[in-house]
Amino acid sequence: RAGKDIAAVATAATEDEEADNSNSFALKFASEDDPKPLSSKKQLTVHFIMGANGMGKTTTIGKLAHRLKAEAGQKVLLAACDTFRAGAVAQLERWGERADVDCFSPNETTNGPSAVLYGALDKAITEEYDVLLVDTSGRLSNNDALTAELVKMKRVIQKRMSTGFDEKVKPIPNLQVPHETLLVIDAAQGRMALDSAKQWDKEIGLSGLILTKLDGSAKGGSVVAVSRELGLPVKLVGVGEGIDDLRDFEPESFVDGLLGIGVAGGGSSKEGKALEARLTQMRKERTQRAKTAPKPSSSPAASAMGGSAGEMTLQGLEDIGSMDMEEGVGEMQMITPGGGAGAGKNKAKNKNKKKKKRKNKK
Image (cartoon, rainbow, N blue to C red):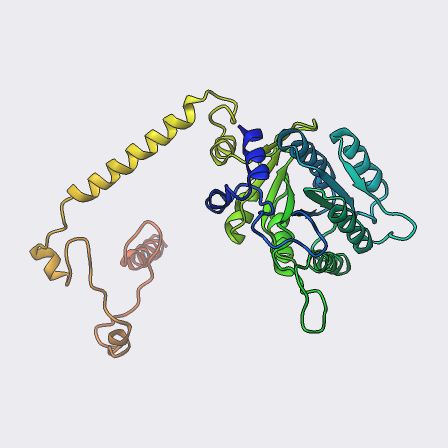
């Protein structure tokens, strides 16, 4: 089913445009109705993929490229824009070979992230590729220099994919691209995932999430907070190291995994439905009890207390402040453990009796 979903969206973007809008979990692709970039004969879809170090961005791009080519017949180009991490370019090139797609890598004239991206866009447009997948350097959200580089790269995409000129014959940035700006989140990430996502969404603008490493013990609960806080859908999930281990996100299966029920949670497929039916029945019973519960009635005792049954009217602080504190206040008595207010007086009498007996003996 997952393969059919991505193939249908990629090969029939125009017909499925309305379905895409209603299904936010589907990846977005360029539509034939969209204006084409300058000097381009066909539409080009650009997916901009980013995230922190070690989240699995490069691996995810390789798996996605494989799916697009094998399941949807797309002509895919990879852009190796991670020029900061040693071995990142070679890793993406190996994934390109495994997926049987082309990879645009840095060379002597294009060795910076933005330069590599511009070269990849040129190649994708002139050679009529269907999809360009952009790999970026792993970074933390508080690394201002690398975050600024991401902002610059997004501007490069919008400028190179311009569809017209302004009055000064300068390209007008195409604000409809990239079609996806996807943040990769590790299933084991905690609070840092939300903090980073907030910052990157503010600086760059995110369109969706990819959850990786769900094949381990981590359940990926942090993605729930990110999705709810920023209103971002989860598009894809990584469930292993194999080239076929990138799946479409299925909300019901994901929740079953979080709760430890159903097939996703290691149980039977009937557990999730049984839990849902039980919760529905409990809600109905609660609603019914609320309707049939007797209303609290007033009584003489309640009226004497100044309210209905179970309520007591307390004296206001302003009334307490206006009281004569000396009125009705007697002598303060010492209260000792094991006795009431007169316990101290009784002990004093006992001591006097003992003294008198001693004098009489003498």
